[in-house]
Image 1 (tube, rainbow, N blue to C red):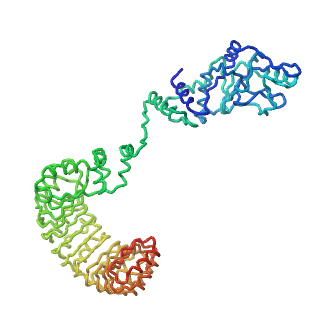
Image 2: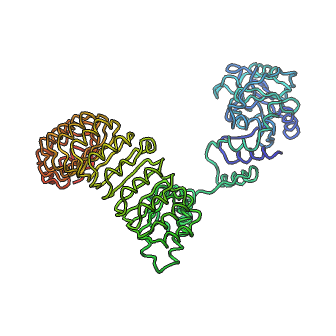
Image 3: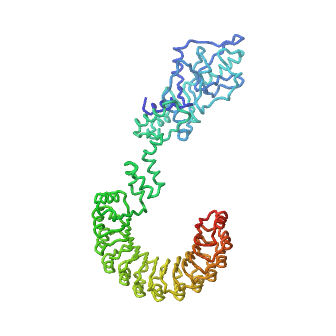
Amino acid sequence: MSTIRKAYMEISNGIRGLRFHRDNATSSSNDNSNNNSSSNSTNSNGAVSSVAAATGPLKSGTTMASEEGCKASGSLATVRTSKSVVHSEESAVAHAMSRLFPNKYSQSSPSSSPSSSPKTDSSKNHDPKTSSNLPGSSLTPPCSSSQTSTTKSSAPAHQSSSFLSSSSSTSSSASKLTVNGDVQICQNGRPSPNLSAARRVSKENVFTQTKLVGSPKAGIASRIRKLNLSMTGQKWAAKPETISELMNDDSFIRKFFLYFTPNERRILCIVCRKWQTILYDSVYWTGATPVIDFKHWTGDPGKRKLCFDHFQQRGFDQVCFLSAVDRDLSDFVSSTPGARRSLRAVCIRCSNITDSALENLLRKAPGISRLELSNCNEVTGSGLWACLNPKIQSLTITDCIHIADDTVGAIAQLLPHLHELNLQAYHVTDNGLALFDSKLNSSIRILRLTSCWEVTNHGVVNIIHSLPNVTVLSLSGCSKVTDDGMEIIAENMKRLKSLDISWCSRITDASLEYVACDLGSLDELILDRCTHVTDIGIGYISTMTSLTRLFIRWCVQVGDFGLHHIFSMRNLRVLSIAGCRRLTSNGLYGLRHLQRLHELEVTNCPGANSAVCRYLKDNMPNTLILE
């Protein structure tokens, strides 16, 4: 018996409703004639009704049909005893294949007519309890139990003889097996070509397409696993059953750790070595910025080396250095040869590094595209001329006292792919902004000039002519910019999406009128600390239907009348009125009309008492209220 047949036999032993049957009429007839004694059924009139051997199986509990209710012609029936049950391998395989793969082996094949009719043998013992039928077998219409014939039949003699003649006339030497509407012919014990094709099914298809039906017996699962391992080589992994086993299952905890933040994963790394090994995969640290504070490592070289090793293992692509000196950056470059090539963003804050250390870092890590220098007072403009990488796309320089107009010139000349520039420099003037070129610096889209006190309306004109593609502009703290400069911006920078003119003390309601008339596509407007903006200016900007984010923090002249204008801005998503002292409780109650708000800030507003905040929370359930 082949291995595939053994597999079917193993599965059939553990599944209810799946049975293999023998359907070879010739061999069954020979076995029954040698092992069983002849018997006759005699009715009350003395008539003997003998039962002929048929060529097909019946369902369990189904008996032979009588003359009135059933016709024997065309029916497939079989008789077998409980002591001599021999399974036919060919019919068993065919039946199993039809049960397991009904779509593939359900096509009907032409059936051959019976060649000869065997003689009836009245010596056969007939037991209706042992009769069975394959699913889908073609049978005569069912008869009631009162019409069936048994070994002790009381039917008339003419009925028995009539049934005998009809049964013997339909007998055939060729065994017919009908499975799901497909008639297979087995002649002389040899299977049909369809059965030969069924035996050639590959081992992989047997287990990938088999569907177990019913409740398996005890131990069948382990037997099937062993059989699958011996035939296909595929090992079935046991599923964890306890919490301890679950937390040690690699496939589970790899997905489980994805639900934590990078800071929480940093704590989970110290639970055990297994968790640490899994969490040191780079997929868990994408977008996270590790902060290396060198101030605590001055006398501990072992801790420094361990930190550099862990940095490489986790595959960070960005890093932030605090309190660093030239030696610290040199140690990092020499201790992380693999990580420095994958670095894409570097932030250096509150550090006393010189131009040479910065140049060494940017030369050894050529892939850096984002650079931030904050409170690095030793870095000069000449150092930036020597070390700036043309691949840099985002540059942020804040609180560096040596940064002046020559630094702006280096940025304009050395960074042709610059996309974002954030500059906080007290010594940058209008002449530095004139160094930008409209052709060389056309890629700049984000320009933030923070606390550039020397920039005036002339500098604004230089920005307009040199950087025409800017979509995000911030002049926060540029106190010398007036309404005239805002008029120039509104007329010439139609692509603006975000405008920040906070802390510009010379901005009045006239600037807001220019903005409302000409910047129709503006999405964000920041007016923090614009002390000359009144309710009239708020009325101007309330006509901007495209505005979704509005910040008027500490605009001390804005009152309830200006707030009523804001109620008509149905597209607002974020609104901040923090520090507006003239707003009262009656005006704040009207904020319930802004049902599309996602975030509302009312901190430091005297009118925003607990009753008002509770009312707003009840009537604006989808809004985050910062009180």
